[in-house]
Image (cartoon, rainbow, N blue to C red; front, side):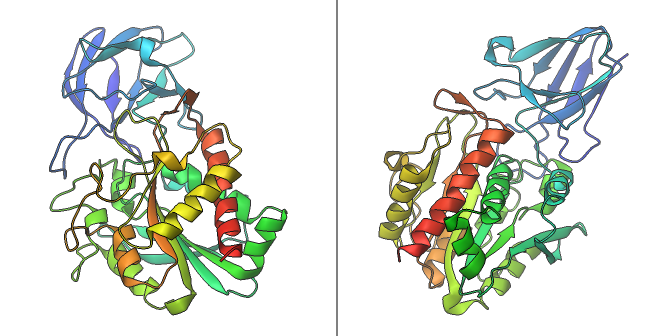
Length: 363
């Protein structure tokens, strides 16, 4: 009999029933106030079998269906054609060479992946921002410039399931260490401070992260934060004073959104749009970005009144002397006609880094 489990970093699944050639499963919503869609599991003892996977708690398939891996090192999308919409299920025929496999809502990213990436960049300064509630180190990466004239803050995983944000950070780090003129400007003048996993426990434990009980990390920027990482981040950036020039918080949008967009704050919106225009003109990746897709304050879900919005980007825009602070939403699996993967996500991140350099040079 095959075995399904979530006992690995980022794993998330609950098994309701196992049959000879099928399984009924659902995403684990522990610690979450509302329904959400992230899942990731391992299956073993499957050599030569064909198994049908029924999900019992809503639509949990994004634009490209299911993500598959044999070893958690390389992932590929199986596509929507493999999905039975009426049954909310998918089937997979395992070859005689596969006895263990992994399936996921999206391409996972955990501490192991970050450490593997950073092996290429020994000059990245690695600090510990704080220790999480479950005794994990919350990483604080610093790209240290020669003159340290300004500081840029980049954050991700305020919502633990939003994995694709980390590939953007990898692309930005790639750009910072490049040899072109815009990279050299950053290396000379601009320190980058990167917090890749704000909700470190959620990342490693495979939590949804969104709408956590009693609130998630991106609703913790208050007078009395409950999470150690948000408290530590507020304390850290409070030391920066006028050197703190801009902040970007990276997110992934709802389950099937297929465009990259910037969430505009009610403060300093002119500067956000200047940066957006630079990003649109600078971006040469296959993943297209247009300033027309920005979500203005007051439109859609971006409508919280002053005092209600307790997000990171809002808090910084309101309380610190940055040129701007905003969030970027990056889809899980598709951008327009392009299928998102690790490589083109890093490429888009590269052009975010280039756009940050060009923006700072023109102010």
